[in-house]
Length: 449
Image (cartoon, rainbow, N blue to C red; front, side, top):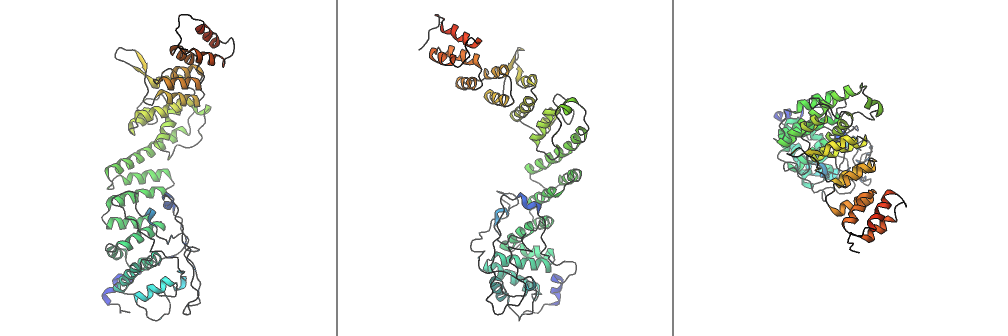
């Protein structure tokens, strides 16, 4: 083993760096991952005659169950698809399922004869007793890391990185990892698994990845439970170096939560009739924009645009499209059976002052939403009649029993046989039944069949 030089001491011997602990920690950020990565169980090699009589712990069990030692980089990037994100690691040759169980008492220290980095890594792979504490100088530690990377064993690489994190200052460790891509990716993944977001942010900043650093810092809001503190945190994020699109998203997030806090405080003590008739089932805090718009259309419809809670203000502030606004407002007002408000959503005036109904979503969809909210037949019939496509109009009329539309459509098609078939589905002597009978007896109509 190379004797540590005096000038190397600053790299490793500092009391301000705390030893690593294997205690499990809650990792809320890991809930954002697209899938839960399975932890490979690693068997213990009990046949080693040099093995010390020590406690044996597999990486897949207590007390290190929160660490995914199979470094599958399904979440190695901060944003999936980002060109600046860390590339995925092909772990197929890296993670052998051979015995690799380590003992906690022999992980970083033990009274073993001097071993080279290569011999130490080989013992780590086989799950035999080893000592890392004897690698004192920076040069020896880096040789150990390079040897671990050379065998491309994810378990060994991560174990060595834990040792380096414990024994080197973060500035020195960051500097050395910049030249070692594989080790760097393992280290970033390890920090994420341990929930050390702040350290990841520092690392990304040191790497010059300012946008990724900003996003990682922004995601810390997930760990803030108090809404006021979360709002203040989001406000502090506004000055971070996001991309243009991400900056817009963060600004909207802050504005939305700020507005929700104001609305929530007011509505909790509201005495308006609608709150008595339809008591709130949940808080509006931390709800998505469209949910907030629906809430506004339900409880605050008709308020002036100047109020934070009005639908028109929310639509304007968050640049909600006409189509999305109509869909959301229609659902809310139909739920309340406010058919006059439903009409007002579609009424437009032409340049001559005549009122006409127009919809950006297609009237067949309007009819479906109205029916789901138990709209009366006369309301359904009005909107079925506005469907442009003849086939869609007829199928809608048949589905929702809009008899007049069905009868008039078959009359216009001069389809006598369909009128006869439909007549048999109606109550005898009903107005619709008599209407069909009158049409069938009309000798002036030239039927096609």
